[in-house]
Image (cartoon, rainbow, N blue to C red; front, top):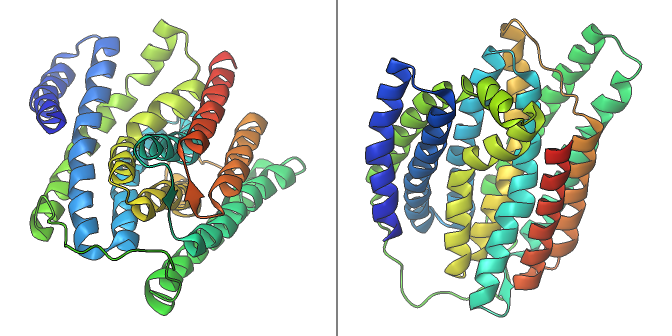
Length: 352
């Protein structure tokens, strides 16, 4: 049923997006059309990556889901950078961290917990990811903000570029560690081998083709979506910070939202956690640094310096996620706790 609804959304949304952009329809109306269309496209990306996860396993499947899901975020951010909307880009990065750790993980734990009283996932992966989260968000994001207080703009950009290169290098090293040198070394002792192999919805080639086409379509819609931000902010009284932290982050991460919840409902918590946490790490250690480096080629350069509310919100979400997930065990109440934290922060950014 839901698959048909999302298909209907895409079949209606894509033509409306194209015609509306050509005929310059009202920005507020097109903002809604673009957002709904991206969510519909994200559902196809989620189903395709779910098929790939069955073929390749939870780690690579989760990584693929995070990568293609974050492709939407990266595309939106590049167009926003090109338009000089630096605050929106930084806010959307903040929103991605909060959305993945609190909203995506929270909904996954909550929905899965309603069906299963107790769900488990690889505790070794959880502890490994905890260290990377601490480094990426609390160390690499806080340090530039602290030193930027006594630096001029040129030195701040130089520091941001240096930190970005280190983050990208460590992220690639982390992938090499998990997928090559230590692949299969840390197995979940309580992991049960399923008696039957689940059949993927699409073949590997078909899933990759759908991911490719969906990503191109999302890129087109995202470019037009960015042009509506200023008008929407003015009409609805929203700040660029709120649009970035909440709206862009939710729309940009719709693929992860759908996939992680589906995986949790099927009791595939290793994939669900890998999507939520892996996506956060990819945003913090790859997407954000890449955007800093790409901004060097645009008229307005983006430093890796967040506002104090953004930093505190991200650090708090990281610490809460580590405390909840570090035991490799979860339930619906822990999911509700993460969701409550996200709602509190959402209210704060809205009023800010």
